[in-house]
Length: 244
Image (cartoon, rainbow, N blue to C red; front, side):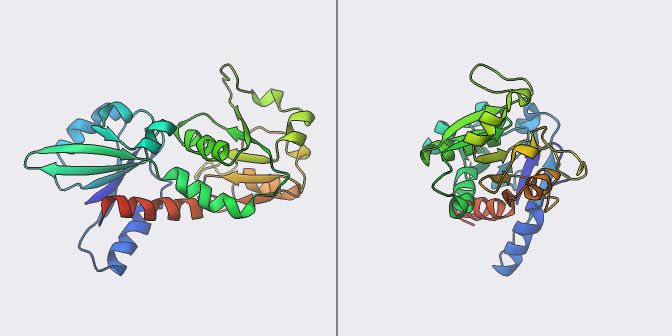
């Protein structure tokens, strides 16, 4: 068995994706959603699921899961967040190995949309997913600023998104859950009127297909993309890690 841990999980398409792939590959495995209210429940949860061989990790545990892992890949260590766990079992004991495939998923899905004038990026949100996005954008050579409702040193608040900031930061990535089903009318509080056809707005959310963030951005001429392709790419990378 494989599955996804996070809380809540009503938004996730992962179970449909993996169970379909199991059927297509004629593999006798299953994938389920495991909403756990706190990450401290993980050790006890694993005891009750000895059939588990791998997990995906989503909001809000991509960073919080790190202390529970026995090993972590170099890239996940650099990013500081994990979204895939391989469970290596030996008798009654097990070893948890953490990886990050969000970075590959984000890189491969945004790269075809990048233009030469896109030299700086704004990342909305500061959670585990934002770490993978920042890692990728910096490796691509972009300057990066994070935007938060409670900014720390070096970060921006939403009220600081001035015309000068928007005119010099042409890539905007939403890594927050704002706008995720069922709260589909919510959107990050950015000055959408300052967006132009020079901007690219990318939303890690894929449910709904067009979030309020993407709709508002598109209305002002920005190129837009949701996170569905990223989901598929990172999921296939997880599949390889699990060696199903």
